Length: 391
Image (cartoon, rainbow, N blue to C red; front, side, top):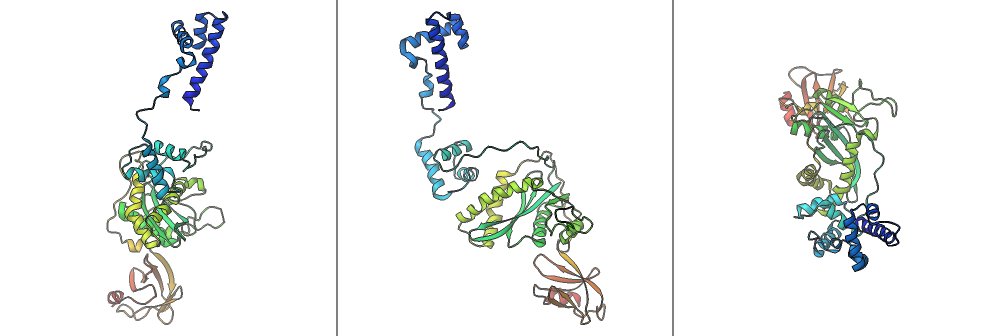
């Protein structure tokens, strides 16, 4: 029974109780009216209608009329059938965004009610106790979140989704799938953000080993001993902030819950079965739609992003490892023997300390101080272009 019907029945019982007490001369008309919370004249009108038509005379006839705003049955059925045919298992908010893009005019609540009444979606459980959340940053570019989530994004395949988002607006600047989260994927997410928006102030993440060195499991991070990623952030001039609990990363966690609910279904709907096609779909379609729906305005106008000028991003977003040159004028790096070619500055570099740079595309380079001695492909073979530069 709807609440309006329940109230109608309650008022009827209260009236009949007052009416029969008045008929039994236990109450005056004035007292009966006061009991019902109406004036004496209204009580007399109720009495006349009750004696003439019985309980029917007191029912609000508007409740039995069909609202002119009520949707026709074929429209309700169309919404339900489209959900069953192509969007089975989608949550209501996700389905509603497609419904609106398809020209639907009804409200979110209307669509949700129609699907719940048809048994297609379950009613949500009640929310837990109230918690006070941390206020968002007032300006864009003040704090950037990054996190990864392992999930079956493409049917039958598990990959890691790397998301880099703004704390002030929830806008995602970089989103892509990789085989496994690590230093290079994290650098790629930050680089895409810097190229698109500029240099930001602070970087917020969990305590994964590619972000932080943590001497004791579950303990505090060692900020004086940066990882390769941490060193890249120092070169960029960005402060890193570690999160010490899942609740502290609540915004990222909620965003990933939405991605896990939506992205696999959208990729399946687009009949995508490989990671390359999935990343194209994310870049060209999914990310813009997601930001359009979930991006919020910042509390303050303006931006904390600093424009990017003449910085060499390849040298900022690379891993750097110190090595000593062997007697054969080679550097051994992860099983690869990198031969240093002859150059006009020095006969050989035997026993010299050099640095091996590994870039985002997995190519390598050897530096002696600020000078690049040689560049190599992913297999460790010298690149012709690098030979010309070193000559």
